[in-house]
Image 1 (spheres, rainbow, N blue to C red):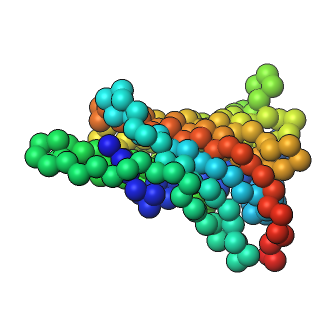
Image 2 (tube, one colour):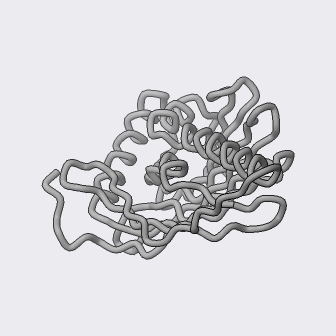
Length: 222
């Protein structure tokens, strides 16, 4: 089973450094986060990297798709296919099942992408309950896109960078989880290294890996 590049394009996360400081007020929180995210996005626009997407259905992984990702001089993200699974024509029941899985994967990844849009992330941070623990700052927000969803973000209090995000939501009435791990590029931005999306009732998992972050040799004009 394969999926097209366009069907996972919305998956790419603006993997910004979601900085958080001990807050004195909501206004201070919003300004601090907005500044940190903006600075991180500017750093990211000078980098290119590879992204591998693997769909797992009923425990069987598909051949992964690999893209090269970069930003152009206008600040728009550009994707170039490095390798993609060969499309297989299937008829009958098998073809219908494969088509149904593809549509589910498309819908699942579109939903995951909605939670990772910068504006949605900012709204989640603004309404989050913030607590300090040993070696970490914890943010918990709920009722983001759906009435029963939630997001938990763990932040390194020393660097003010997100290192993990858990999202719990539903897709077509089925529980869905998204787990994202972040870490900084040496002397560069904070980036999403992995994303694992799971909808057990649909027997679908999607693994995303971002790697080979390299600073672009041609500087952007903006």
